[in-house]
Image (tube, rainbow, N blue to C red; front, side, top):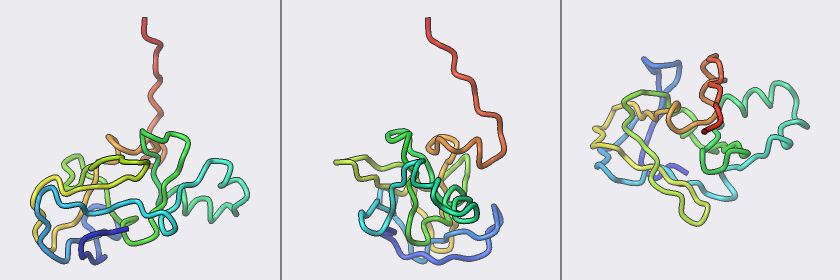
Length: 139
C-alpha cells in the first residue's frame, strides 16, 4: 500500500508513471506490503488464469530476491512505478515477511517515482526481453 501521496500521469520513461504529489524526504517509507490488499501469488496460482489475466499479473507484479517463488502484485497505483538505473525508491526492509520501500533521496513534488527493476526484480530479464543470465557453479 502506498504510504505517500501520489498521482498517475504520462511518463517520459514508459507510458504511465507514478508521481509524487507531495515532497517526500529521504528515508521516508513510500510503500509497504499490506496483506489483504497486496497479493503474493505462486506460479501455480497463475496457471488457472486466462492468458490475458496471467499477462496482466506478470506485467504488474515482481519477484523479490527474498521470495523467489512468489509474484508480488500491488493492489494500488504502486504498480505504475517505472524502472530507472538511478531510482528514487529503494528496498527498505523485509521484517516479519513484510516488504517496504523507502525514498532513496529527497523527492520533490511532481517527480516520477522510480525503482531499479534489474537490481530488485528477479523477473527483470523477461520483462525487458533480455536473455536470462546463466549462473555457473562456484568452484
